Image (cartoon, rainbow, N blue to C red):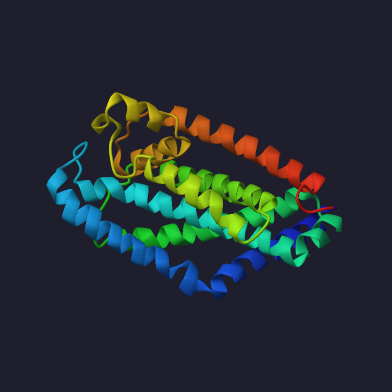
Length: 257
């Protein structure tokens, strides 16, 4: 496939993905804003006032980066898993696989859609956060880098879930029993120094913990771990997930009979 056709194919897939979640913005964009307000009021104001500052920041300011990244993770994942399984259910993905489009174009179209939804929802949550606290963002480049890497990573995770899902109920199992626990145990609401040794070790095994800490370093200038290590771990997951997604699409796993 030459560059012109590849560009048209990628644009078409991306446009379809964006229009899919934009048409139902009341379901995709509004709920995260409402949920975030509840987090800020309950955890930030009511509970946070009893906790005190962490690393020189008020508790509500400390949890803002984690809540922004959590919204990016959940929405990037949800967009791709729902879209891919829907395409598989209606037979659209089979048409893509037998077309001249290479697997990397198909993958890129779904991933860009997931990343854009994740970033848009993250922007909504950021706007809500301005009513509760103002962060210095000393390293905006690091903040944006982690946003993009995290959104891309969980978009790919959503595609893998969509490949193996056998029903619409199947696309909710991983978010409920894997993604949500990892996210809540990823350091959004606490610092590593606040934990006993056992739970500190558990947190260090959680890849989301590293992503949240790098994002917090870019937003607040403080982190429990080094940014280089966290970025390296995220990059390794990105490379591994990219290889897995391309393999699944090339082989038609869960799609072709």
